[in-house]
Length: 207
View (cartoon, rainbow, N blue to C red):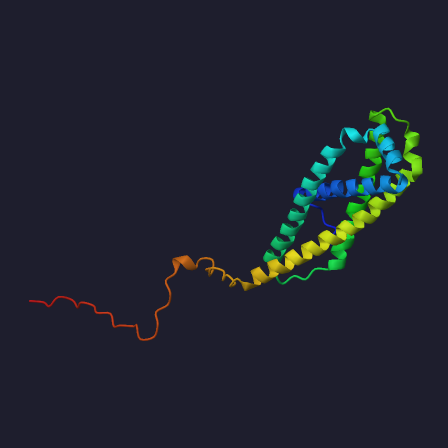
């Protein structure tokens, strides 16, 4: 579990934030559908609380960020499998760690989003409790966050298995031989049979 609860990298934080934004909009839409089943009443509530100003742009950005987040998590799993093909990781631990981060993040985004919508559109904050849209939305965000964590954990696991298969198929690289300290200044000992008699000149003969 310690490996899953490590500090996230910048790419992982951005991917998690993009996925949380996409999940937030799904839960946001479902909350209003359940809180105001009547289409006319729901459209009036959305218009009065400032949703029509940014909703289409929010959907477009959520689609882009969500897709980019899925690609990032898949690539991360593939690279992890390539680097460490022999390391086995807990799939349950990975899912729990992601759910513990994603679900509360989505719920927080939803609460801040709903509050800002009403403040910017000068709508009363009491509209947060029309049809229990606030409490219903928080519950949906927690559920969707856990579901998305399950999806990206499974996606990362599948990508990691592919990385393990690719990484395990590569021939292992042998490390370069390392010489002992000080051995560079010494010549190797001669082999047997390489000893030869050393010829020396005698003294010059006298007269």
